[in-house]
Image 1 (cartoon, rainbow, N blue to C red):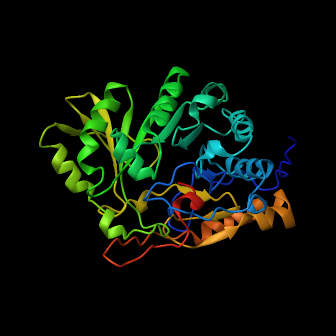
Image 2 (cartoon, rainbow, N blue to C red; image 1 turned 90 degrees about the horizontal axis):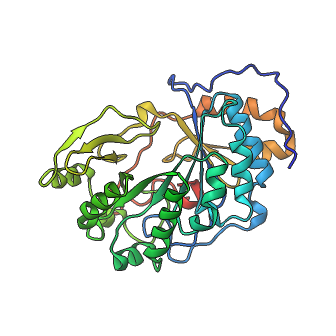
Image 3 (cartoon, rainbow, N blue to C red; image 1 turned 30 degrees about the vertical axis):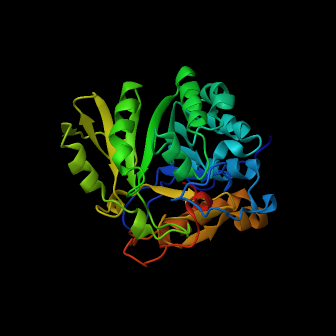
Length: 340
C-alpha cells in the first residue's frame, strides 16, 4: 500500500479552533456497518451505505496521516463495528507504524464480537487499549439491547483482548428501565477482571425508532444510587476524553461518567470525527462538516492542510443535545454512521 504524503509546505502548525482549543484526537470511522443493532445506536433495520461511498483504506490512512502531521497524537478507530470491514487490520497496522513518529496512541472502539479473531494482530500493531461496548451481563437484557446479540461472543472477545495484553475499558450506555438496575453487577464484574468502566448518558444522535426521553437516565441519579452501596472517591485522572473518574473503594477499580446532557463537557473538546465516507464533523451534536473525500479525490493530499485549517475556523463551541419528550434527534445521522 503506497500512500502519498503531502509535501511539508505547511509547518507543523497545531490545529487550534476559534475558541483556543487544540485538537489532538481524531476518531476515525472505517464503516457504518455493525453486526449488532443496539437500541440507542441505530434502527432495527438500518440502511447501510454502499461500499462505493466509503473511503478506501489507503484514503483513510492519508487523512489520518495529515492529522498526525498537524499535531493529532491520538487516533481511535471506530465504526459501526470496525472489525467487520474487510482488511481493516491492515490499516491498523499501517497507522500503528506511526506510533512514536507523531502518533502517541492508536486505540479502538469495538463490540468485541470479532475480537477473538484479531486480538493478537491488533496488539502486535501497537494497540494497547480498546473500549468495548457492553451494557449488561444479563444475556436476555443484552439480547434486548443489541436486538439479538449473544453475550458470550462479546465476553469471548474481551477475554481474547486481555490474553493478548490489551487493556480493556468497558463502555456502558445507561438506559432507563432496561439496564440501569444491572450496572452495579457489570461494574463489579469488570473491576474484578481488571477493566475500567465508563458509564455514558444516551445521546440524541440519529433516529433509532424509540423516543430518547424514554431511554434517558441521568448519571447524576445513577451515581447517587451507586453511593448507596459503595464509596466513590473523585479522581483527577484523564484519558484524553470527556469522562470524569472516581475510584470505587470497595472494588478498587476506576469508574468514569460521560454526561453530555446533565453536565456539558464541551469547553475542553479536543477532538473531531471523520466518517467512513470522508465527512469531517467538528462536533458530534452539530451538522457542520467538511467533505474531505471530495477534497482528497479532486485536489489531492496536498489540499488537506488547508481543509483542516478551514475546519478549525468553523468548529462550534458546543453541542445542543436535548432529550425532552418529543424533541427528536439533534442530528439526523446515526451514531454508527458518525463514528461512535
